[in-house]
Amino acid sequence: MDTAEFKQRMMPYARQMYTVAFSILKESSDAEDAVQDVFLRMWEKRSGVGSIANLKAYLLSAVRNRSFDMIEKRRSGGDDGAIELSDEGKDAGQMERKDAVSKIIGLISALPEPQRTVISMHDIEGMEYDEISRLTGMNEGALRTALSRARRRIREIFKG
View (tube, rainbow, N blue to C red):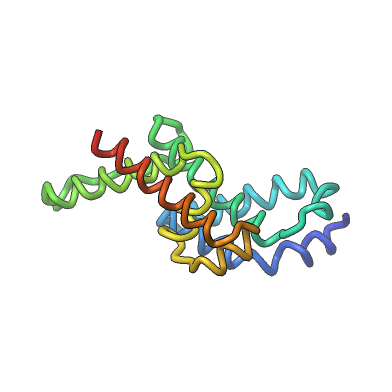
């Protein structure tokens, strides 16, 4: 696959990939980095791109997972452009909510597939079941089950 063909196949999904990454990372530059990382990985493995049945679903899942990896790396003290949470001007409630959100994102990134994919697409990206089904190939019943299990697991860990 040459550069022109690669661009022709990948670029139609760049905006959606950025939207997914930004919804998770909340920083434009970080979202751009996540998309770029996925494109770089795809370029390195371009010989296998033709065998991917649903390229859009694959790319959106890859950028979502890369975004969660970036967050997890920051949480674990990685030097990957760490997010700095400022306490200045924040009341205790806001800081607690920010801590809770960070913990939940970490929990989501630790979920097994397909739970991580389904909860990310539905609860973070706001996708409807029919769209998730189309992208993942799962039927609606399986999606609902995976989402329910993911939510229950997060509640158990978060409260326990």
